Length: 217
Length: 299
Image (cartoon, rainbow over all chains, first blue to last red; front, side, top):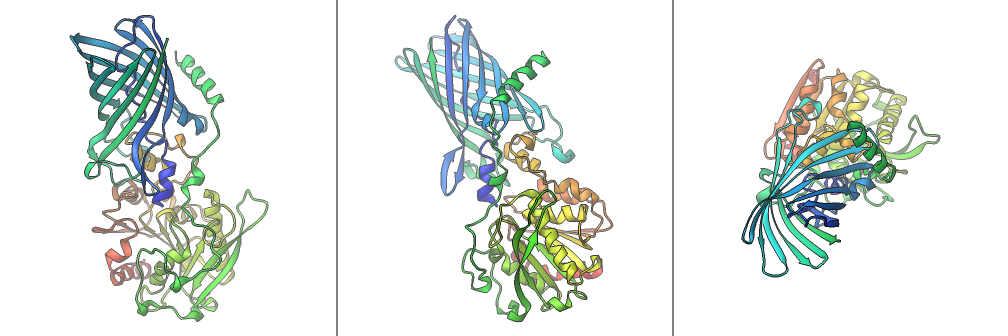
């Protein structure tokens, strides 16, 4: 059963489904369109691949330290599930080349079949370091908050926080930006038993790799 | 604000495709042209020694016609009966609902083992390949699973079977038709329900996969829900599950089904160090057979 069911869950991990959004705010008045690809690594037909989650988005620099953004998750759409996230990114503090940035968003999902709606607050915290040329690197964490207390069949929902440390680099070249990020979803939680063969150290958590492309104007 | 959000979602959903992941659930091979049974050399969970051999005269491979309620025509599926067909009117028979993986050749050893529970060839065993599996025609579907197992019950009934002598055994995905047809009987109402490593529901699989309380409807239209169906089952329940099941978790799948049972009698057989598919071997074939035969004899 295992091999085929993995396919069923190609879009299953909506948590940790994209690279960190707008790690740093845009300039004031600046616009950006974005595309993201990647997801948790799984074993599939003997190979290790990232779950091919995709999304497209838009951001606008309201102020020099505040950006509004929204994203549409396109892989989910293919399967009749609408998923969007929207939020703000702001620069908390900058000291020389170091910065601390936060993004708070709501990830909202509904399916066309049973109209089940769920929303999860998501908080990203990232420390950034500006390189002299070519962009910046960052390290931080992504946090999904689950408010639901009960899973199906009345079973307690054990986890209220999906914590994922992450590290990445944003390559910046004039109007284009390219982002690569590695994430480790729930590194302290056993990833078995599970229908999905996640790749994690000693069967803990799920490692993921993500790519983002930004065009500013 | 709420209306605004709903409007945005509704607009987005207009552009969504109607892909569903349901058909990808089924794990089948290319269509077989024949069953090899003891000559099958492909992967198997275990292989029994010669003491479990079944005489050729007691092995019957045949086809059945299966038709779901919403279908206009029937589908040819294949079945294997172990035992004397002429004695179905007096024998106790186990209807074995196999798991999602592959076909009856893969499960042949399991069927032989069940035939030997309580003594050599003690029980008749009927096994089918669901539509789309093995040599069976068609494509699998949830309603097809139920219709195919019911077609097997019809065949048993035509050969003299009644409710009091029929046990139904579901392994993994096979727990879905086994539980469904005990909960909502069609042709026959089995007298015993045996579940090995049952699948609680699609919702549990999604929740295990995401670690979030996420609805199954985001991914699949499958309505398999043994954890709820079991509440309407009144047959004595036998549940066995590997404590090291890395696919369908003991706690999140099996235990939920077991806890939700409200019928007359239930017993559980957790198996140390057994992964999915390892329950008979890790229990020990003799102990496994004794557990099953004692359950059927005593309840």
